[in-house]
Amino acid sequence: MRTLLRRRLIASTLALIIGLIGVNMAQAQYCNPTYSIGCSGDDGINNFSFAGIVNNNSGCNNGQGNAYTYFSAIQGQVTGGSTYTISMQSISPTWSEGFAVWIDYDQNGKFDATEKIYSSPTTGTSATTFTGPITIPASALPGTTRLRVVCQYATIPTDPCVSGSFGEAEDYPLMILGASVQAVYPGQGSILQINTVYDGTNGNLKPSVTLGRLPASSSITQRFSYKIKVVNAGNAQTGTVVYEMLDPVTNSTTITNLPAVPPDPTVYVAQKAQGPWAGSNGTFYTNPAFFVAGTYRTEVVHELVDASNNVIFSQNVAATFVVAVDRDIAATSIESPLPMNRQRYIRSTGGNNNSIPIRVRYTNFGLETVKRYRATVTIRRASNNQVVSTPMEVIRSTDANGGLPATGLPT
Image (cartoon, rainbow, N blue to C red; front, side, top):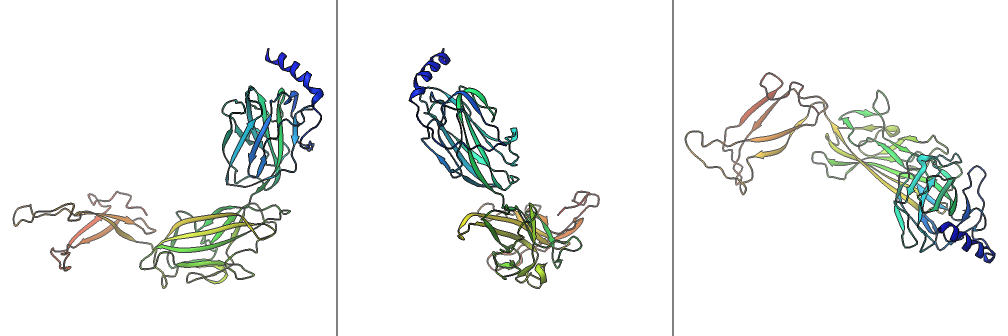
């Protein structure tokens, strides 16, 4: 009934439509959606926004044709690995429409099923704004590609090359900036050895950053800084920089001299560095003469810069790792006795009533599995540090009834 009524309404108004909005410039490799009736009866896209694309109050475009428009002058810009908000709204306050959106991530001239980035959860009139977060895959091919939004009456679109009755489709150019930090070394959870030179030989990797590359034709450039800082290592102050990469050409702490067209992704290995743990040609030497074993953090700041040297995207990456000795075990907590304000013990001169439970937790921070250790406990008076007990010694081992698992205490 509604189809017959609307056909009459549309037929009576076609003569009043005198112009088109937008530019119909679809490239040949992309399929063109077609609608037999289109959006002349307000089954269309009125508002759409995403990552710099803003096309609001657009109304029905190409309503006398196939209701498909390529807005070549409205371009968005995204970076792989980042998240953006998408928003869309239909024209009619009466007819209910569904939406779907695709991005040609691999730039092969078609919208694959895996490239659908959004489907409206329901259909809705112009009173409903459909919105949601969209994360761009880090693997998306850098360069200019195509985004397509499809609107369809009374249903949620499933085909980017739709052939239907009522609806509208819009395409937009989208620039994907693929350059982002994908990994760092030392990375999260890495375990390095004290008094070792990490120079790229014998499996001892030099500090590095894995970057996605920019397209060769892009006017955008990238740069980054790389530091290794103390987190918790003996008496060293937290935040102390022990290693910092340098640009091999300018000697700046900001690396700008990157390969013009590197592979994607590319692993940038340190070529120069400064700091107490920096060696020649960017090597990393965990020299115990300067700092002891402990916890350290790799910090990278990555930026994309436009032709006017304005920062258009910034990314901060941090990874905590350990520099360890072969054998290193430490008490990480005293669980009993508890502080005096929480637990008191009655002093007695006889029987077993004068025993105080001692419980300490130990952690293996070394590179080797611990199969035997000795712990000594001394109790001192808080007021003057006077020893009030005979030092107690406990030995734990993987021997039978030795207190450790048969496999030992792992790092």
